[in-house]
View: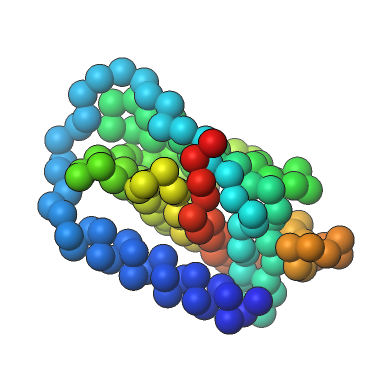
Length: 162
């Protein structure tokens, strides 16, 4: 599982770097009203603490993205009662949506660092949050759970639009 997290982290960083370098981001707010950018489903979110001493996953995740003006809200839910809400700003360029997350508003308010990329009906995200505790499965198909605490990285890769 550590190899998978490392591989997905590398893949995510490559996609984000290539995406951000390939096009010039505009700082102009997107005009218009509220838009539901969609709900995305995946097999499992990957979780790890820093420095990767504990890893786990949240199965059956859904990520729902809503936007208004240049603001975005991303709600992520999954098995074992996992529910998180993040806010930030977004930009759209060349058919891709980029969201920079800055806050977690649920279950508690705190600063986060994270990026979301939506392209070709797929959503990929990486979120870093401190002082967090999540109960997660130790393997995607198993029933055993573990609590992962501290500074966490949450990855969702290639979640498909419903």
